[in-house]
Length: 323
Length: 221
Image (cartoon, rainbow over all chains, first blue to last red; front, top):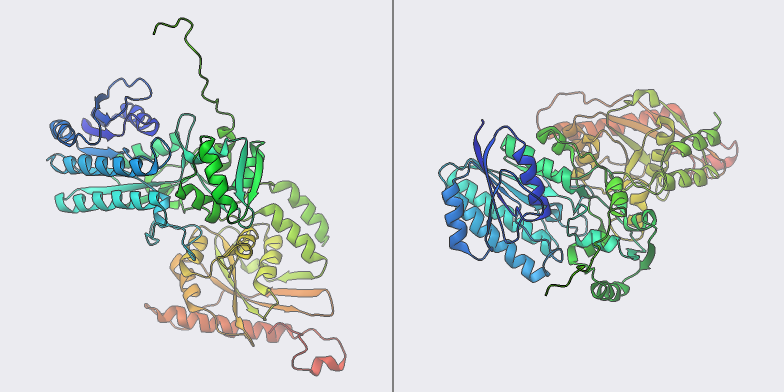
């Protein structure tokens, strides 16, 4: 089992960096390599980083094929309005998925592929299950849901064609002190909008728990989708109260105005976040414990409490202006 | 039993301002129980049949507009000291959102199966009428989740505060089946068991000629 080569895509993001740093401490991991458009967020000791943009298809293929990984951990996805606008995020995610998973398929040593997905994949149409399990039908109703469904589809097709196992981690909205999250950003605004008529519950996952799930999935060679969700749930009104924010009750057309104002204030509300605030977002996390052996160490309520205690970005001007 | 004292005691245990994994708000449920207690004094019998930690599906007889599954869920939940959910919330705001807050689940086999598999106690109603049909797909969800199905009779009176939920031992199908017939036959058996529980309970009597009126609203059927 020792000496496995593991390739992490999206290693420059906060979640990718965390996954790589946890993989570095694993005995079974031999060589570790990663790729992203941006450099990692913290120092990685063993990981060889390649800075390549998702549209540089040939360089990606060369890098991945040369490394010839046993395990591919594909974390290189862009959530809409997290680091890129929705259209750009969808394009970048599609480019990365096609290039990286396609390149991995050319590697003779490849055994497992683990992809990052989201519980947005189940959709929240009328009559959708309150707490869908992994066997619930895939009926995404948001752009992000359709994006992660496409990633899972691409990975499954590649896995079937080349005969490797494919596991998907369907993450709840990921929050962390440095994770760019449209939901987290919205909840930290001085005034937080909530649906007066519904105020449905949603669940989240802390970045460290999500990273631990990736490491466990890579170690076990997960071959199916699993929901990765922290226990508990919270509503937008409850979150606002816990964070001592001003809750703003909204009904119907008010949301259009609120979304515009929020966008101008620097916290755009993409459709999957709006959907969570209107229809809720929960998922059954039983198999996370039974199959992965991982239990979220931080509950949804605790993650939200921490969200309000994480320090804001402090911009300090240079003491000596050199340029 | 000092019902109010029990509620106050548990009020300090359940946190306020949070919802559970299904969106049930314990503080709101507590308020609803206090409100309901102003109208009904519900006694629960047969709760010793129910598992203390595992999941269970309780099927109650239902009368139109009586909200029997909801009040049975509240009463059984108070007796067991654990959350009890009910089947039959709509999926439209604001009624559906409110129902979810007080423990409502969608009327969908996968939804019920998910709750039962997570060791939750769920109350569902038979169809309206004189112990109406029991939805066999929901009974099938219980079978698939490996939990038992318990019949329960509910009786109440429009003129008094007394109401009762009587839970019977787990229903068992008379024949062992390997296929989908098992859920159909178990659903029929649950219906028979509820009818016999109602017969054993008798109906509440006012001692007036109202008891002979067929639409007096007395009794649980």
